[in-house]
Every structure is written in structure tokens, then in C-alpha cells.
Image (cartoon, rainbow, N blue to C red):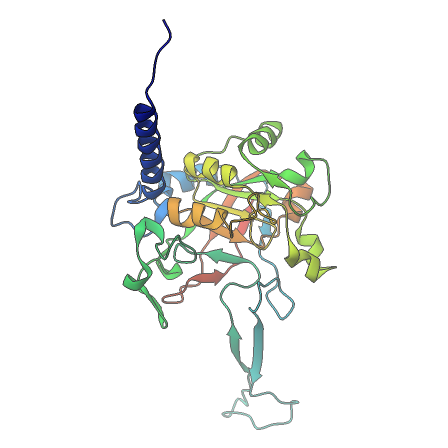
Length: 315
């Protein structure tokens, strides 16, 4: 006998479904790590994880993952860099003391989010709410963040994983707009014999950093990168940070052109996962190094939203 449903029942079901959907969208806080937590996925770090990652060291080779930070470093407009060397001279000026000591100093004026950088949990949010639902009015001030600042992040020392998306997709440099999500990440990891786990730092190699050295305008106009589904997948695995050899880590143009940097709040605000931008993964990819000890002690500038970094991979 066919099931008969009245128009009222249909309307009620739609209202209920809409309400459930809206509630689901609003329920991204409090964090899985507790309502008062301020370090997000860094809670996945542990001495045990460090010891596990240290056992990956086989050759002792080290890889600097940061690019040189300077006037031409990749930077989202209007960010820029300016260094002034103080006490400049031509080697003929006065000296100090009987030992005739001389020296130089320097003054740096720069944005924190320039070159190879760490995005802290106070960088991007949703409707002025950031990680764990913190509202901007409660922690953001011109002189610095009262919470979620990068100086409060513990050292990130863990297992690093490189997913070579360029190799997996058969291109030296992936085109801008190339998105990779769960299916692509799982396939690439399987091909490399890699399993991504809780506490890992996941880096993607796309070849895009090469473009920054030949065509800066093209480099900043778009990029291959992580899609929203891929971000949710990695966050669900419990990774600490996600990075790439691109300036935003996420795919641009975005999968949904109506959105603005949708992967950023998905990782940072909703899941407390840190973002590592402009990582130089080229040597790791060239050497086929897919697992390594990842070491990052970010500079501890009080109240900072972001930080210029040079993480080290040890193989």
C-alpha cells in the first residue's frame, strides 16, 4: 500500500531538515579539545610522537623548507619587506675599545605573513568568530592578539609527510585551479606507500613554487591546491598542520567561486589545524623523501597572527 504524505508533513520535514542543517553549520565549536582550548590540533603532539618521528631518521640529511625572505619573497598584496642596515660604513669609520671592535645592526619592517609562513588560529574565522568560537571583540587588538597568537604554539616536532601531487598527476607543475580532495590524497598516499595519521604534518608538492621565480604575477593569480573536502578529510585524521609549495595552500580559483579562501577557516577556525604556506618541497620531492622528522620552532613574537618560518625536514 503506497505511503501517503500530507503537504503539512512535507513542510514540517523540510523545516526540520533546514534547522538540522543550520545547527550543523553552527556546531563547529566548542573544539574537540575542550571549550577553553587555544592551541587546536597541536594537542596531537606528544613526546611519543617525537620519538616515533625520530626513528624515521636514516641518513641525517636536512632540508630547509623555507624560502629566502626578502623584497621578492612571495607575498599576498599589500604585504612587503624592507630591511635597513644600521651603522653602515665603508670600513674607515671609528672603532670601539682597545680591541678596535666594529659592527652592524639592522632594522626590519615587514608583515609577518610573507614568504614561508605559519598561519596561526587567529588568522581567519567565520563571521568574526575564530577557533573555538572566540569572537574578535574578545581577543583581537591593534597591539596584538590576547589569545591564539603564534607565540603560544608549542614547538611543532612530529612526523612529516610529503604527498607529491605533481608526480601523482603526472605534471611537473600542476595548473592553477587544480583541486585535490580526499580521493586524490588517498590515491597519492597509497601510491607512495604512506599512511597519514594523527599528529602528522602534511605537506603537498605541486611544483607551483617554481612559478614564483619566473612569473610572480602568475604565481599570485591562482594556484593548485587543497579543496574543502580534502581539508575536512585531513582534519578528521587529526593532522597538526597542512602546508604546500604555494602561497595559500588551497586551490585558486576556488571550487565554489562565491566563497573566499574557504579552506582557511575550515582548517584554522573549525578544526584548529595550522597552515604552512610557501614551503619549499622541491628537494624532498626530487629525492623521493616522503616521511621525515619535521621540526619547527616558530619565532615567539607576542600577539602575532602569523610568523615567518623555516621548518626543517630531517631524513
